[in-house]
Image 1 (cartoon, rainbow, N blue to C red):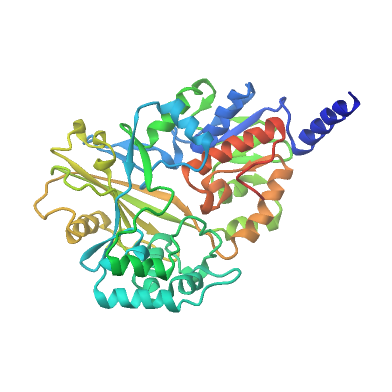
Image 2: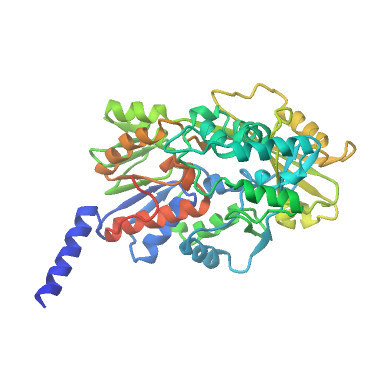
Length: 468
């Protein structure tokens, strides 16, 4: 009996030390996947003392969707739903039920005048013979990498000169909009297929496709409403505690209050923020100078999403396509009508098709093309996705200022300065841009972070995904 009492006391002491308690008023900033998942987990655990504030008029954040005037649905980027976590699977099942379709990934890389199945480095047999030889020779001669490296050195050491030249460097420069040498290689994890030269040689010699790599080889997508439908439905279950059109502009960490652009103030015991961590730190009164400087050193890129709807039947079974060539303005095109017929007007894919294109920009590589939409439409013709006579039914453009949190060489040291100070003041910055860790920046990661931080606040349980 005495040992049981000691165990209970030890558990309570541990929960208190980590902040776990059920009498906290929790304020959540952002109705994206992370913020909504946090709120849902609080509710599931019987905690009712919380409010969620969202600056937009709708839920979803980076995972939201819009319907344009012509009736085409667009996501804010090329999203697909796949999962590393049972908690995310459960949430999706509860919120969406049968209203999702499952797809097998069919992705290709445009190289010169041909399509190479993704991953590029696994399917060298589709290249012109001289290019295939150069890529394979580079794999054989690759020196390998030891310890921490910049991303550029990692590419060269892992794939050799050929694959780096023909795909890895040009494509990643387009995506990130910064030189690879300014990026760390610590984010790679399961984001890049690392192929052994023997496997690449087998595929080439035996003429076998090698397309099954990666966690998104099978993915799901809502049958209507785009990705945002998931989070609209989730928000609806929490409706009485979600406050829209509340943009956070100031945090008083000592008094534990937040102020919004509409002039309203609100107190908190714990603040869970999913807004970009650099903007969060900039809003905090009395924040130490070293924390401010660390936040200002963080870098991100933006994406101009241009969706083009055509009055042409859907005739392409591919999911999404990659474009490393500098002459093509976009780095990726999603065959959006393929994901769900309801993404086009009247769900009529015998009449309409739609392409969601993404073009990155940053301070290093600003967008200088004033007529990007025209260049995108020209590019879709150049890469033979549509013909020159295809009637354009809709052109929808969204500027996503915060698209990729860039894993620069100094990112980890900056976060090591910022995050501990925030947590000392009961501020928990999580989610894609709250954590500023691209390697845990998918929707399922964001949901998992939201669930974990709720459990930390209620029970003192260590977070399983995010770590300082």
